Image (cartoon, rainbow, N blue to C red; front, side, top):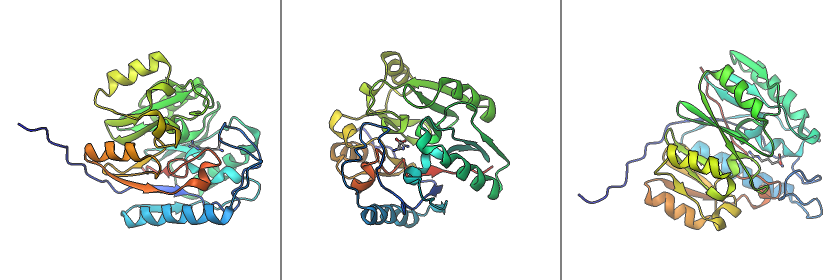
Length: 275
Ligand code: ARG
């Protein structure tokens, strides 16, 4: 029997996004940010609008949270919370520059009928570090989210939470080094993880797509999958080809301006999972 590429099925999603009206880089809290380098807010908005339109074209629902002046990183909504089964665990940020985003997210979830909205009691940067993969949560630590936040997520959501340790400061959030493609399939960049975490990932996902260094360094892993369509930064060409070989449909997007803040398509996208 010839090797058959699996048939991939898209599931419609509900996302939360924030228009980068106030986007700029005026502080540096990750190695990609350089306040000396000029940013083009209008270009960031155009790139974001393209991403937003693409989600809608692919049949997804996008909800919006209002951008606030003085919070230039608010465009990266993935960091605002982790949402599972109608429960929102709202972020507690590591850096004071982003602290104001927590109140905004908490208010948004309260106003939108979520059955439980809880502010994290430990540093917890939402879906930047806590990625829902089917019946489990993969949880990053090392640079931002505190390991104690993993236990808190386990208690709130009642699912298995597996801790993964990041070791390269360029890949400071789990979603910069790993993307969930489907309930039980992922892609990741092994060198971003400690040896123990690499071993855990190998045993959990023996058929994972492994990204090369060049694709990881252009934020190729900061991707959003609906089970079939995978949006990823356009320079990650080899990774797009690997995805296609595995039956996915890659959608390269230009997020060059948003990358100046250290974020790509996934950072700009929080998945909402109502009850
Ligand atoms: N400038 C932001 C920070 O350093 C970028 C966040 C990117 N978001 C993400 N989900 N990785 O916090």
